[in-house]
Structures are given as C-alpha cells and as structure tokens.
Length: 256
Ligand SMILES: Nc1ncnc2c1ncn2[C@@H]1O[C@H](COP(=O)(O)OP(=O)(O)O)[C@@H](O)[C@H]1O
Ligand SMILES: [Mg+2]
Image 1 (cartoon, helix red, strand yellow):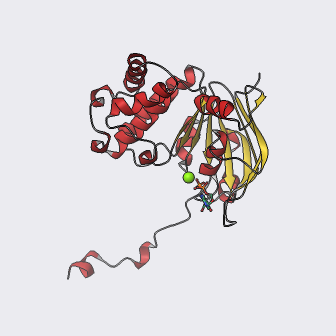
Image 2 (cartoon, helix red, strand yellow):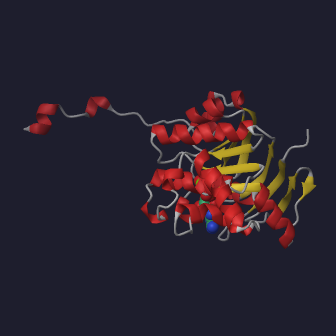
Image 3 (cartoon, protein in one colour):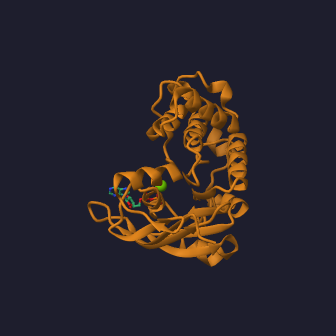
C-alpha cells in the first residue's frame, strides 16, 4: 500500500550550525499511529516542520501519496492542507478573536463560505467536546483548552496526516484522555498520526510504530515493540535520577 506520507533522508542544519536533521526517514500509513520519541533538542519539532512543508530540507524529499512534493505555491498549499501540524505551543497557532472564529479560519482559507466554514468549525469543536467554548475569546482559555482548540483548528481542515508536537504536555489526566479519544476516532477514520512526545509510557500504550531521534539521527524506526530498554538508554529516554534518601534530614531536624 502506498504510504500517505513518506519522507526520505531529510538533512537540515539550523543557522548557527547546532541541531538539525541527519538523513532522517519516516513513513506514515493511513490509520496508523506513530510515536516520535527523543530527548529535548533531538530534532522532533524540526522534523515535524519538514513534514508539512514549513521548512525545506537541504537534501532529501517528501512524498504525499507517492508523489514527490515540490515547493511551488500550489503544491505547498495542497501539502499543508493534507498534512496538519499542531504546534508545541498553542499560542503559535491561535489567532482568531473567538474560539469559533479561530477554528473556522482554516476552512475559510480553503475557500468555503462563512456558513460552511462555521459548520466545519462546529463539527471539529464537537469532536473535541469544545462546543460550549465556541463564543469564548481565545485569550480566556486555560492552557489545556488552548491545546484542544488548536487541535480543533487543524481537524477542521480534514487532513489526511496529523502531526502533533507534544500535544499532551501540560494536560491533566482527564484532558489527556479526551484528546487521546479524539485521536483514536481520527485513526479509525483513516488519518495517519505522528505524535512527538517524551512520554515513553504513553508511546507504548498508544503507538503502532515508533521513530526515535537522538541528535538529529534516527536510532530506531519500527514497530513500537522494538523500543527495548537498551534503545531507551541509548536515546536518553530513561529516567536516571534517584533520590538519595539516606542524606535527607529527619523531620525533627527540619522543624526545630
Ligand atoms: N530556529 C532554530 N535556529 C537554530 N537552532 C534551532 C532552531 N530550532 C531548533 N534549533 C536547535 O535544533 C535542535 C533540535 O531542536 P528541536 O527540533 O526543537 O528538538 P526537539 O523538538 O526534539 O526538542 C536543538 O539543538 C535546537 O536548539
Ligand atoms: Mg520540540
């Protein structure tokens, strides 16, 4: 089966020389969930920006449904419509005065009239249990609500591929559950999902496949079961800090 998105040998260096990507490949299939793991600075966000065309690699290519993507305006527009990216920080994504206006902005940019764009936006908000917030000013949302509104804005575009940059960071258990439920429905509907996270437990529970980056290189790409303890150590994904309990002063000592 042709993958919906296929990136080959992406190489990129940030201005200033640090960080980047060194020959990273990733293949996403319809309805499959892929976890993108790696420590801070591994290149996860950089990779996601390449996969929806916001950043051009110095070498390598991205294919959508088998077609190599070029960087002319028409292809870039189609690319960003098909491949949705939910940014790490919702404030980078939210622009509308109200929640409904914000979520309807993308569909309106697709050329839908106001009524149809609002319908799409309401559908995406309902999908995430956010309809009650439709009239709320964006600045009056909690951090968790902002994250889900940002996701609704991308869902409203009905992308074939959804890229999520640490979407569960800062969410409480219930909000995380609602977000993951929504992702399950999208996967069932055939959307290909790629989620950057450093929550290894979540990745194990959620993902079918995994891509592990360290210093801009893929150290593992394969089914999630291939994420062994030795890979986790290599990828610095294992907590190594332990509390030295013997050195803790007694409660009495603290109080007196
Ligand atoms: N715009 C930029 N300019 C220069 N360096 C950057 C830029 N964005 C990211 N980097 C560097 O690239 C590396 C990878 O960053 P990033 O992709 O954000 O990692 P991750 O998302 O895995 O934490 C880091 O060393 C980071 O400091
Ligand atoms: Mg990041």
